[in-house]
Length: 184
Length: 134
Image 1 (tube, each protein chain N blue to C red):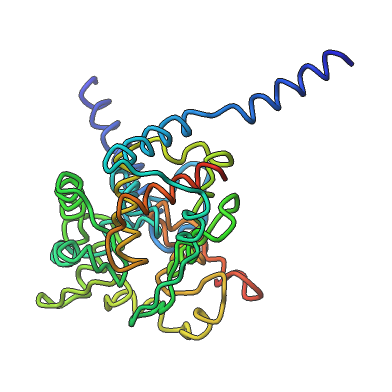
Image 2: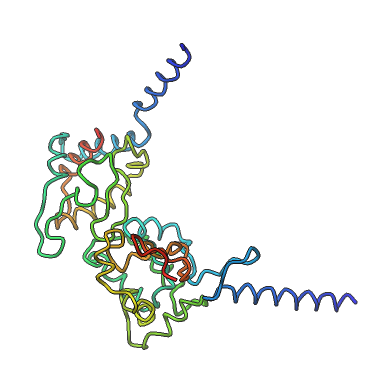
């Protein structure tokens, strides 16, 4: 009797867990029971936030593969033409955080897709250069972005993806500033 | 009525009393002074703040004000990423200048980007003296 209760509970909790997991997909319509699992692991490291997210959105480590982060971190004195030098101590801590949580080491939906969209010898320094990103944004014209003062650059995720800083890039969260409004 | 006046008066005092930010700022300025028997001025700092340096790469003209703005009581905007930068004025934004390591980090990064070289102790002192009065 006791055993069957245990087995029953296991089955029920597995069903709940898989339902919760499924709701993280693109079909999520909003439920009061399950929050969607963010499609990229949110940033948790305070040092990373302080050092990197002062100048731009704190891009989640799961948006690029490990080899990209390693390459990017070798040139911080010329970081996309800006200076982002770190002390030796912060450098090591941030490099470890980025590589430990990189796209190719993550089990989050979009991280997997980003990692899988790249050839093994492809080491993009920009998230916007990954095949996955390009495919997802192919309907957008670049001039729409650069001519919109509130967006400015395609690297400015948060300008349109309202939950980008939380690692969530679902289509129904898109709000394009100006006349365009919702995307979906 | 009397009570109201008292409250307003204490509020005024609270606003004008140097905050912790100011204490760290003063100790950093004193540290710089000791490094070369230097003296600093608000005017020199203001000139440095708005001084434009020409570069080969975009943006070709750069100054501290490019990102922080000329009026440091207002928010600035990162010239490239457009991310909002909170005011540099310690009166408006008491979170500024509370950590010596942070002050040095930003001087290093931003002097190199803006002027193409590190700032001298004299320049850093003048800039801090200027900002401390804003």
